[in-house]
Length: 390
Image (cartoon, rainbow, N blue to C red):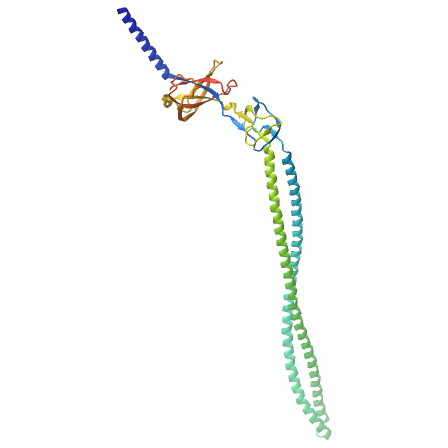
């Protein structure tokens, strides 16, 4: 009995020691089972069309911008060519309209120059005529006053002349006295006739000056006619400018339609959005590609990662940036990685994931990106991640 009791005690001690070692081991590190995964980029065309060429197959490496699939674009090319022809037609129309507008602008400039010259000439002619009228009026007044004075003297001398003539004939005065009065009378008559002619000439000059003024004023009507012609040409230019603007707007619409078609033509070339590897090809030559339906799926081999599920009770012991080791079946070496993502939502352990924890307990999805992704690491491979607690 004593031997049995001692054996039981020894077994219990061994069990306790084993449990203690296992608990310590669990606290030092944790193994998480999961898979190698990548973020898949689905590539879809923006337009629908028949596939006329396929450039890559599954497993091929591509560079960003590489053409993956080419779709037929005959109808788009035809529409584009029609619009380009229309664009040229409208551009020719705009050039013709601009030439027409320019000719009207030249004519307008000529009329403005002519109006300016005529205006200056008219105003100068009016000013000259007014000055001539002023001078002629003053001269007429002077001559009229002079004529009146001479006429008054002439009348007086004429009476003296007649009286002296009678006295001379009667012998009452000397011949010299008669000749003096006679000379004076003849002189005044000559002066009177001369003033009359000067006055008549001055009045004629005044009349002509007034006529010149009227003619100059009439020339203002020519300015009015020029103003009307200028206004008419300006209105025509405005109309032509409006027509040109309509053509420009039409041209812009055609350009916008061409650009839109060019975008659609460019969209017939389905290009790789990233540097990566083709995971799957979902289209073949001759098939109809549907807009926004994936034709290729790519992934970036430089951004491959391990995905697993971390037990909730250890969540407080990990953080972003923690280093881990990942092992895959068939390879002895481990791959260095670091925790780059920890989900903020708990979930029950997925059935396909094998862990040493009870399945009913909640876990958090984690991702560990590899420091140096290896070509042997492929999406979907099962893997184990070993995490050493700090």
